[in-house]
Amino acid sequence: MAVATEGLEKLEDMIVRQAEATGAQVAAAKAAIGSVIFGQEGVVEQALITVLCGGHALLIGLPGLAKTKLVETMGIVLGLDARRIQFTPDLMPSDILGSEVLDESPGGKRNFRFIPGPIFGQLLMADEINRASPRTQSALLQAMQEHHVTVAGNRHDVPRPFHVLATQNPIEQEGTYPLPEAQLDRFLMQIDVDYPDHASERKIVFDTTGTEESKPKPTMTADELLAAQRLVRRLPVGESVVEAILNLVRSARPGPESGEIGKLISWGPSPRASQALMLVARARALIDGRLSPSIDDVMAMAEPILKHRMALTFAARADGESMEGVIGKLKTRIG
View (cartoon, rainbow, N blue to C red):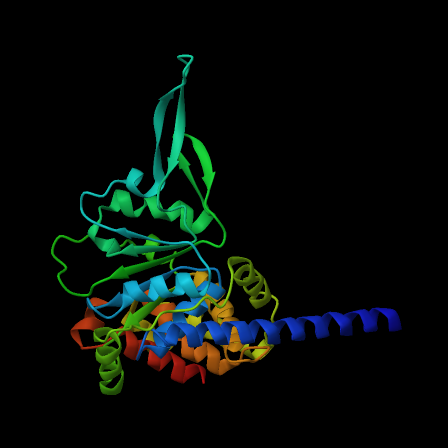
């Protein structure tokens, strides 16, 4: 019995040391990204949380708010192979996945050779994803969920880690194809990118129009990121936090558990939202230097996790209700 207790204590000590070391690495990565992306602390943190959880994010913001630069900077800082695809109406699935070409050897023998597309990177930016056709959008689905693609009946695994950060502009909606609910649910969270404040914009102006511009520095490697992702899943979660997650997600669905608020909701989040909240609460705690998440972590991440997984009724929208307002009411109920 004493040997088993001693072994358990050693395991706990190892996890604590690993968490402290990983937390320091992640904090350095956050600072390195923040030295280039000014005035978007919340966006940087949420993007880092997404990657630490092994997930994908949807970045919503107006043009010129450094969404593309954020992805490029993260690629450098985290030591990932970052690639970018500009989604347009004429983009085809093969432009993303790759295609097979017919090769002829010197002896006259012919065979097909697969040429990988840009999806075979570790950090993929899908720029203006809603401008491509649904057929092309769906080309990302299998890779995002299953970490492989199928071309001409053959399976091709994407590298690990693998993350998709897709952007959408909330204006100029003509000629766009809104993402279906099934594809929205594949994104761990929706990150809203807003205008920087006055001081941050002043800093942007001076930094980007001078002779020298701030450059990001690598702080982690892909292998260290994978180790951090494994650690996130090992962090303990208290029962009160688990109950807060379940109560929040279940109350976001129409039905008796949501009470009067349920009358405002057309459809709510699936169990993927509960899984996502459990992961992001752990990752947020790690970034903050804590070894286990709190209910405050759940409340802080509720909106980016839930808002793209819910829809309001027509009556609620007509009465001026917003998704942010409804989620705020749900959070107040939970605590």
